[in-house]
Length: 462
Image (tube, rainbow, N blue to C red):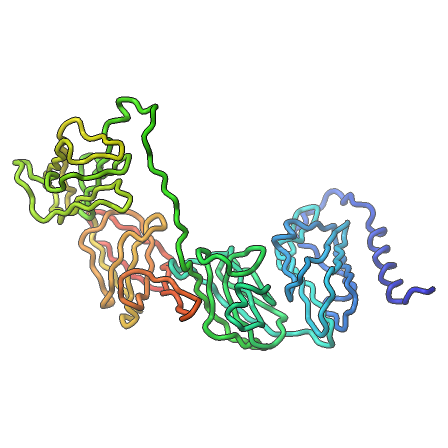
């Protein structure tokens, strides 16, 4: 029985490329190769139509290897079983396990996987395209992904498209298409079949489904109509619920020494100076109980009790905060009588404690004059000041200027929260039921520096 001519030609060409490149020792000397591998032959050819084979050959102009193929390769539309892909010398072979759908455009995006052997030059974003029908689909869809709570981007996320528009599809079904989010927060789909799709943002995981409400998730309230000129979208990723961290508290131990059994705590002031902008905090080694809050007194140097201070115990019952409208450069004492505080092991102070300290001076702080030339106060903006990725202060903005008379010197990041419900904090979104989008935060790209004893004038734009 004779083989079809096309099959013979295919295997002859494979043989020619493999045997013709048997010597894998590159010539010495000459300039360093800085060019990525270039496709010179594809069987079937790139962007071929009416393709009915499940076996493919890609041949390049230099020796290639595939690195991290599993995390880089995207096959579109999504297939049940990943194709078998192998490489040798200058050739990459592809064999689909699944039957190919009729009249469908397929793309294989190799991401960062394809590199040359000699210098590891990457053929970044190399794509191979073919169609089982008579045309190549040319639908496209681009956009941008933002983490709603911070205004930052997260390149570990992916965007998925479902042609099943039912809300349950993101929980139950494999997406029709998916793509990566790059380091700038952008995503891009090409060669999509025209039609309506539900678009979602999820973490890059094996299932490509939304199966954990503590992970990032984003959605559009209406389907995307994909065509050659699809409008771009911005989607906002949010965590509907926060992961609960289990806290482990110290318990009784037979190994406790006499020193360990003393009531231990640290005061928040530094070098005997209390910050004017926050409470005095006493942090204890173990959970505590306060037997008599009235006995803990904030007094002056004559031991006259101050009025208007507050005592607050945090939810973990390990930090006692003494709040007060601190004046500058004044001496204070905090009196903690014996037995007023007891930890979870029953330990208390051996005697009454007296903590002496001064409040900081005005010159230890800087004045900040903010200007917001393009602020829209109808959107209820809130200025957020951030240190070490944590919002430390929030201020509602009612005009395009705002002054803070005292602020601790240092370097800070800024963001603007658009506080839809005017409660002063960021509120997350919800998909099930009401499909509520999260509140939006805009990251201010340039950090600010606050100098002490200085009028710091800062113009904020975005």
